[in-house]
Amino acid sequence: MKNSEIKALTVEDLIEKIGTETESYGKLKFAQAITPIENPMKIREMRRFIAKLKTELKAKQLAN
Image (cartoon, rainbow, N blue to C red; front, side):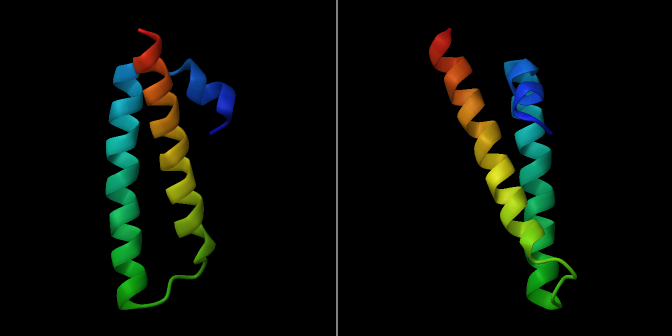
């Protein structure tokens, strides 16, 4: 998802997206703990994507 697409999301959409991404991040971390996943860089990408979503959410909340 591009930054412009993230900025276009509403606060409710951001909260929902953060919830789903955090859940899938937890599942991925669990899968990595059991057996190494094919692409371990996916964990870092997901963590950074969640951080981008949280940053945009905080910016929108402060703007209101």
